[in-house]
Image (cartoon, rainbow, N blue to C red; front, side, top):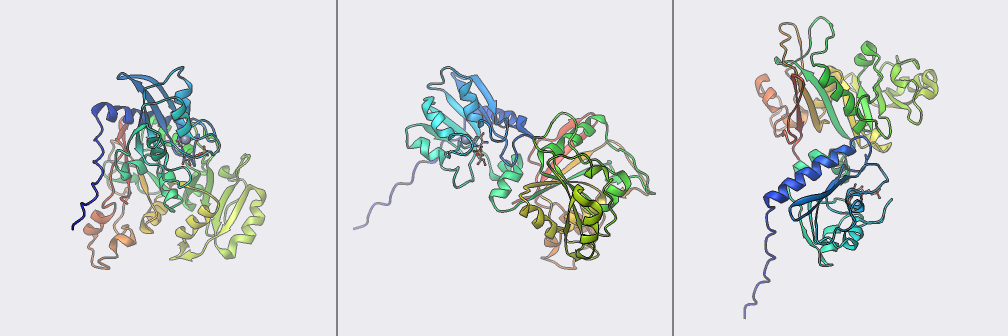
Length: 395
Ligand code: AOF
Ligand code: ZN
């Protein structure tokens, strides 16, 4: 006799309009944690009763209250309410007690979450709550969108640290600078503020040789976001030319810069830089430093996110080595014209993207291949007359 097949569980109900709205709000509130919570994710929580928002909170500080606990703490009575959170509530006692227990103690009737918790220790909170009679719905959304919201966190959980972001400012004709070695800001004041805010949310800021030689940048996060830990400056210096007087290596308490050079230069350079930086030796490939090896070194130092601040040659090398996960592209309404320095010169396609058809790609094909499959998952943002487009690598 045939046995009746076990009935599959009913598919989860799709989110209602209110659910979508409140989850989007939780994500937005979570972003207030920029610069203060990494390597933890940015997380927001919204508590709703009778269609009204009665509390909102975010994970505000690494080691501090998680978003759900902070939201519940602001309420005298949350019984019967729905809690929306951008990350599945954790079930672990870490630096703070588990969110799941706070949710249960508050007698929340329903939890709706956006992204699943990837950690094996922290995960399973949804199931834990379900088995105790709380209605739990989620994860809603797609993996690509969760990763785009907290790329360093989700990629590290998948064993892919550090996550690498590349920042470029381009003209409408795709140039990063006028020709002839001239330097010019293409973007306006509002974009510049955002550019100064970005480093607050990453562990390290990377620059190539030409950039530190030409600009002597400070590589600090300035402006609206004050980072919990200043990002570590990471400078490429294949020839070993840096001096301890470089501004990026000055006046740092707690963090030391990292300078990447060849094995032949390392000892001499470390002596010159003294305590102002850690010199790391990286193999050479094609007349440059092996950037994948540098990333492995940074991973070994616990770094989960790196922002490349410039310049064009480094950007091209990172792209060619297929190391970039995100592109922050500031587009300015100016045309540089003849002689400009193109952001994406022909031949810059990542090697892996070309591997299927080696050598066969015409230049025009390469231009199409670069960033193929990448998506603009975060909404473009206007800064003055400029537009910031964020592109994320597909999985
Ligand atoms: C949540 N809500 O707001 C956050 C969560 O170091 P701890 O003890 O604070 O735990 C950090 C881990 O907890 C972090 O790696 C991630 O897995 C989760 N973050 N979970 O329920 C939050 N920030
Ligand atoms: Zn938690």
